[in-house]
Image 1 (cartoon, helix red, strand yellow):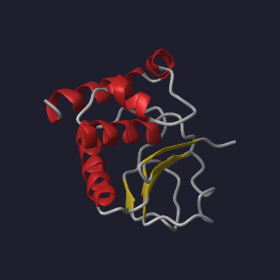
Image 2: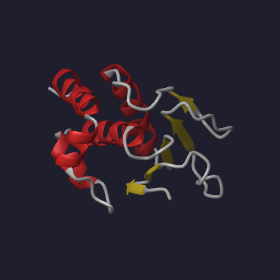
Image 3: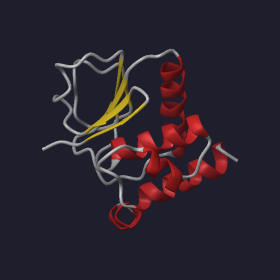
Length: 136
């Protein structure tokens, strides 16, 4: 089972091979899972804190591509932690909004803020640093 979230042509998908039949202009991989369709890779094993500078790098790439009307997919292996965290940072950066507002921007299934905070507090901390240092 995999999850999808969408925002203005940006798709976040969990299964690193499930989107191969769909057409995307740019594929961002934020996991240890290798995929021959990847255009940009930031390898992160699961349950490892994310460097806010990597969140910024991906957010800047996504912003540029979405402004050009490109379809972007951000994927990891499970679609719960890494791809969602990188996607939240991208939404925060593009729209200059906070973490909770970015979570509301994601389409169904919505992310439960408390569940996200409890399951992966270190990713939330990465987003807090990202928000403080790159959006202030």
